[in-house]
Length: 170
Ligand code: FEO
Image 1 (cartoon, protein in one colour):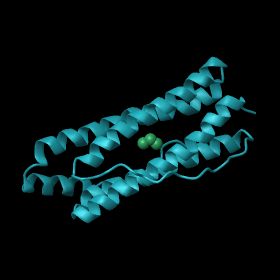
Image 2: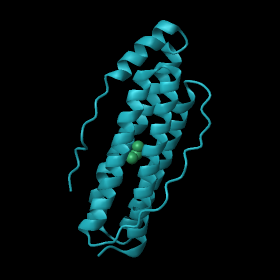
Image 3: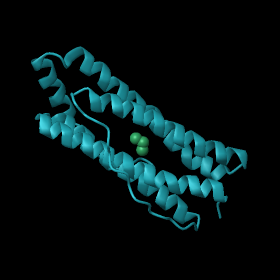
Image 4: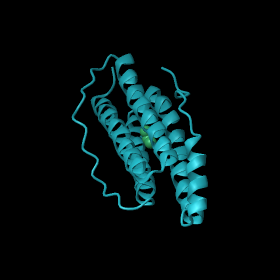
């Protein structure tokens, strides 16, 4: 059995990860409308990864005999007006998710819940990578995105991203 506060935070994180998937699907849809299918692909893959993250939290709770409550997922409502908007919103969102993971870690640390801390270690590392990816995309867009040929090549690069299952198994 997990501590109630830790279990509640883990359950909330299920919803946050599904929201992340929803948000990134919204970004992908925006880029489809702009004719940037590579950017759209990148965010479709990201949405799949976020769904995987949600399912990892579900599995961890279940492995610890805790019930899982699925709450309503918020509507993505970040206004997207230009090709940079999703990238900047994506970085901000990942920084927020990092803070959520740290909050759960804090709660687990406080009660010496080493098992949950070990489970969260993967997410701490993953968040570092996701923030780096998000900030790299902004830098590339700043350098190449303002000329048509640069944007075209960047879109092609992002089209190459392929989905792979998470390295964490439970
Ligand atoms: Fe599941 Fe992008 O953090």
